[in-house]
Image (cartoon, rainbow, N blue to C red; front, side, top):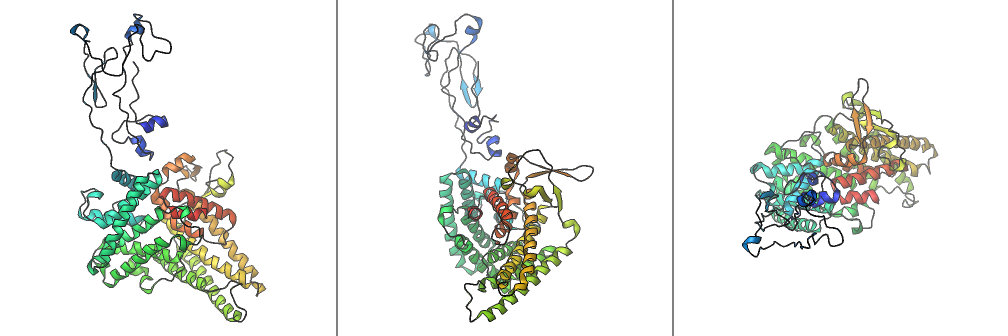
Length: 557
């Protein structure tokens, strides 16, 4: 006789084979689907088909086949109760099926004890989803290639687990950091799976964490703890995660990310207090936390066109070294240049005629600074060893005709890097330099209305922007797992991955490396339209991978 499917409801609706793992099947967990559980098979009817197959009975036909047999006997869905000893059916040996014992004989089933089905709490689902999708690692030390924006939660988890490594995250005795991680976990899970109860739970935990942080900041001894600094940064990620398009209509990044930047200002005050008290000398973990948070804060200042404070400028004091230290110094100079350019009103409509001469002198000063800084970027790239550079490949043609405006690979070329750390390094380099040259272009665009001999300089700057934008576009497919690399006897062959495989293989740990460079690049006004459209489309893809609502808003503005 045919047996009913034992799979979960989600696998049945997807029409895939379920592995029947409890409480959540592995097919749903691997595919990041919400497992809707297993159906109760208590009410199923089991019929003896032997009499029909042997010809002893005629198989029933007609509209009443579901309720009546060929002898006119009704088949009830309730257990049959024999009236006397002669009518008592023969009991067959019990058969185990999904935790319930069934006694089958001629459509009869005696009631048995139903074992309870294990359920997974919303908190466990949120933590499991976030740790799996975001690639959270419990490492206590991260190298320069990975100690980046994506390491904040990894550091936070490591700090929580440092004292009680055998406890689960929700059982750890560190309420502030635990609440912060639970808040962003629920928000990320609720946003991705559209679970309103998870979003509500995340909001409640966010409020509790915020209150506890404010109380801790009033205590000088508590304010400098690693947990306070990390929790403040994590709450800024929470604000990004729950951001929705209808929340604000302005296109200005300062208006869109006002709540996020408020958390960054709080983290900057905490970090300054830690440096004054030499808290970073306590242990290696504290020093690493300061270094990662500092990088986070400087990028926030660059995005807001703010100057870097004196105590935050020297990366060597925070543990930067090698290539990263050289790029770090250029990053600080880029922040200063953007601050000067923002303060300088060089737009034609805002410069008064009476003060135009003095204003032009300031323009020339900023222009000279931008040109010197661009030369410094070129010198830094020239000093990078060849083994730390990328290799450019032409993607193998698969014969499929694609619309160039929606193609995941720009112009059929990709850059392959030795490691993802190198990809992040070069992505930041291009984002910084694009903004430096963009300032040059904007100044020249205005100044050429007065000095006509600046036209050639502007064209040269726009050519540099187009080259940097092209290289950036070619770097993205490697980070988002859009290509496969096949080693051969000669040069490796690079081929496309199917879109379904790209979405499945793309990891938040690598996608987060692109978050800030991509977001900053989309703010560059001088990038040609075809490059800008591709970069915004890929930023939208990254926002879906990392569950970031603010990035989604920036990609669609």
